Length: 70
Image (cartoon, rainbow, N blue to C red; front, top):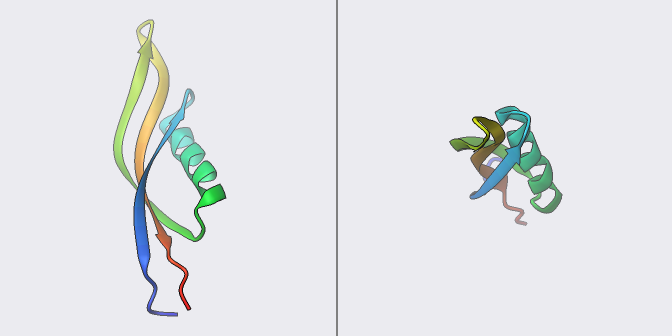
């Protein structure tokens, strides 16, 4: 179908391991409740510092999903 309609929402993922893991965590959890995820855009990256080192990474994403219609 060539007349798809999409919506974008903002989500935030986090991980103690890496920015990539934070993105993957956010998408994995969002895909459980949002159908037809199509793309993501990284809006912000930040982190939490613990004792002078990275405690965890946090990534703000906008995700696009296709809206179902008949």
